Length: 151
Image (tube, rainbow, N blue to C red):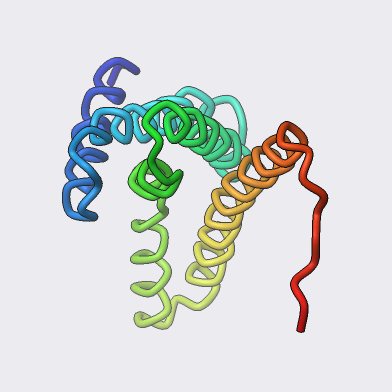
């Protein structure tokens, strides 16, 4: 399947999940663009590199677009990033892991489980990395000193 079809299908899937998550209506198109861009990046990179680094780069692209669209629309970043990572979530990997474990295929189940954990971790690291960088840049532009909360 061509990358254009991947982009279109993942756009509609992301918009569908954004509707389920009650994302503001004016943010649906931007959220769809986040998800479809992330999935297209992942699909383009998957033949070239292993799935975990491809998920990391795709999650970075989703989070970066989410930060950009949040500034443009003056909405929370989560309105774009949460629906945007839905196409990347390794749901089939989780399903296959559980199925193999229940069928006593422990070696196959553990192998699939580790791959699923690596892919999920790569997605989380990508989102956290971009969020942290955006926070640092925002703090730098406002020149507010970093303070620790009092206990």
